[in-house]
Image (cartoon, rainbow, N blue to C red; front, side):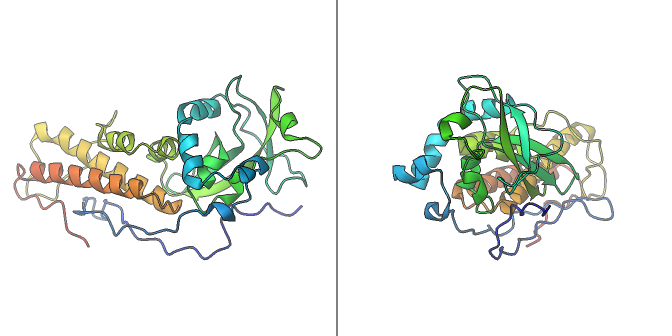
Length: 289
């Protein structure tokens, strides 16, 4: 049987902008003073998507549809978390270009997801599956146009596909994403579109700090009272970098995402510069551009 098609579009993808890791080969870290140049991507075009018939005939615009979905963000995320049976091998069937998973639908009144995404994280090698309402993704990432239409088994109508039976089939679509740790932040933003919530999450103090391996390129180690603060700031800056890389990988054109990342990074770099003044010989952040 032929392999299912890739989730990536056949169009020519823009060259990615480099955002090097902060860790240097010598064990030190190097924090740039600002983010790389902002990626510029073309927004999704609604008239290029193979929409479900009901939505196609409604005449709704992309912004209207996306805003309506974001108004349901909490319910849609809950529906995804309550959908089970997403592990195990997929079922190959000629009716679907993607493997199908037999899942248990969320209880009423939750709207069932339409797809399962398998996120292949480059940094950890993890393959992570999450049920999604595909239209939310298809309207924001030009790499995922195939998520805009629900899968309806042959011989069934829309009413049958959304019946209260306990099991249903979901297509399994794979996509590669660079960074695992910060993924939940971007995932939530894709659903709710809240720049304020994203900013708060980027600036929030981490629940746990890494081992004390984050040190300033200084003549002397930082005073002990400064080390936890330093570790926290560097960890949050790494978090911004990871969300930036994931957003670039999805080719998000949403200006609010990039504005929020820049704002968070500037705040954290300014605070880090203040810490550096208290450490003799400190040379971070660095202007790498």
